Image (tube, rainbow, N blue to C red; front, side):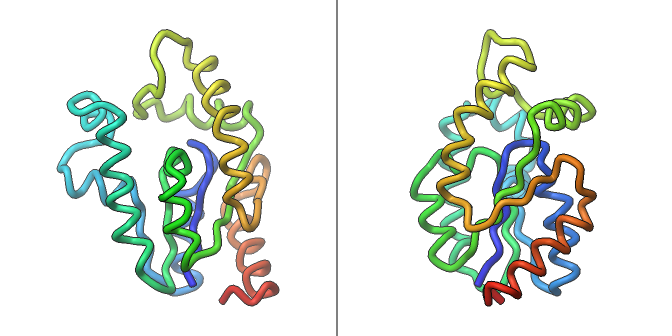
Length: 172
């Protein structure tokens, strides 16, 4: 059974994934990192060259390759939930842990690292994040087997919460 980390940008998926991987001694597969490694350039360049639709195709391809693995941690990009097939593939052999946070906390975290490409055009950074977050929230909730609020929790606390829950539910 895989542990699949989903959530919006800035909710802590990458950091939590790394810690969880070490604690559970399971390999970590970061969908975004794997795309970047395969393409040889950052997501911002991929999107600039090919556009978001092509990136989403690459993402779906990577999800289909990773989802068939077993006993691993999968760190999904924030938009993986936009394709229902991605969610279906990931849930076949995995439990989805939704990492969520208050929008103000997400904005603060994202402000510190502005290396992420815009998701929409013609909006301020804050307007864009609020709009996209609100559009995706129901998709994240529908996919989630468990939700962790990372607004005030340190990554290690979130990892501990996940480990306790997956053992209690017999997911491991």
